[in-house]
Length: 136
Image (tube, rainbow, N blue to C red; front, side, top):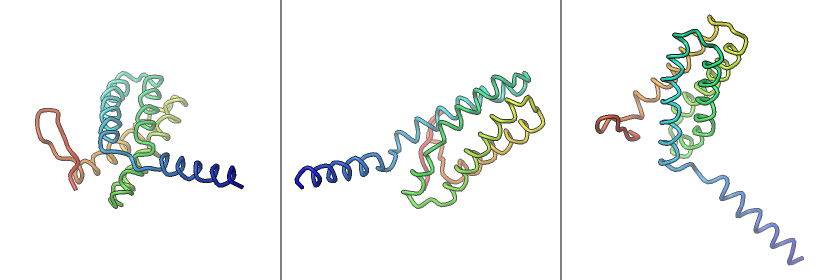
């Protein structure tokens, strides 16, 4: 019985630890990665390199995935929605690029950019040269 209780307690601690909200530092790290890949995505789209488009789109997806939990924990519901839109659009962009469908890739790329822009307009504040902070 003691082993069962100890196991349950350990499980509860692990669930709490793994489910802890993302820190602002982690969010900023992910947003920086997404921004870097947006630059690469724009260049790849201009060059028509669908392989590079897919790579950058996947990286954007990976950077954004899970950040909606940060926004949900801070009760920023619109940001949750924009993040989900960005994640979904990035996946659509990966699929379009892998299918070598430039028209669908362009449309999905626009949706990724629009989701980012919407959230940045509300929740991003410039505080210096290439420096930003979360705006509530």
